[in-house]
Image 1: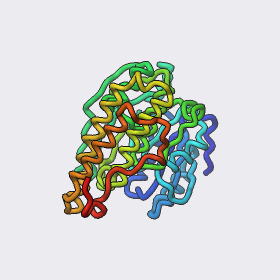
Image 2 (image 1 turned 135 degrees about the vertical axis):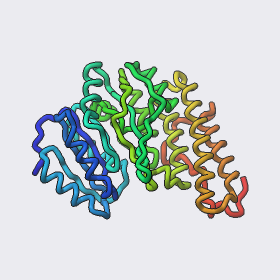
Image 3 (image 1 turned 135 degrees about the horizontal axis):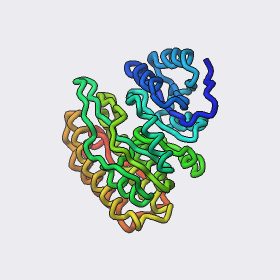
Length: 326
């Protein structure tokens, strides 16, 4: 049946690609929410498996689901497609291979409305799919924060992280500031700082209401040179966004903390990539390139007028590094 929900308070955007194993549980936990004034916009991003059939089944059964289909363009494009037709005052993102607690929407909605905030955040569980083990994210805080306080926490990337799916947003933040997701890996990191920079108030509730399925096909589990390069680009884009907003000096210390964390993570990802390729040759070269790039993006001589497409690749695959030196 067509989506007949009038004036939904919340629009939930779900990008869907090759998650037949998890999609049904995702949708079932959303339809079981204690808060009911919401619509689901599920974007089938050219999924080659049985996802579209499941989506059509739910669309026929429930009156609050809209299914859109497009050629495969990636998660960012799917999210942007869903946002373009969203009608709710508030906006949520749920990944189609994850699931949520019954009070996920209710508690986030109460937090954002009762505090007249622009963003409300909750915490989450890692659900390790293969072992069926739950692990609650440990670095938590709670309270109402000003823009400066929240952005500082976001840039430090511990108590508030650059994840879009454990939050609810006032949708006008996106529409009034032309915020969309870039087509890249680590798109959340590249975008979250823009969202937070336009939020007057952010509230965090110390409850884990989202279940993130950790599986072998996740971005980090399938890390490669292209994804590492996007991680470095995303870090540079944070600097560019802060500079463009004229607030980089206010958050320079927090940005440097983010840069150090990115550098260490990329070192680990480089080693992991080379180990998977069964060739450690060139790993040190890649690590030196990472350190040099991060140092440049955090340095005083970095030109923030650069745009995403002008940011060069830093890391090469082990195959491409054969015979190369720094």
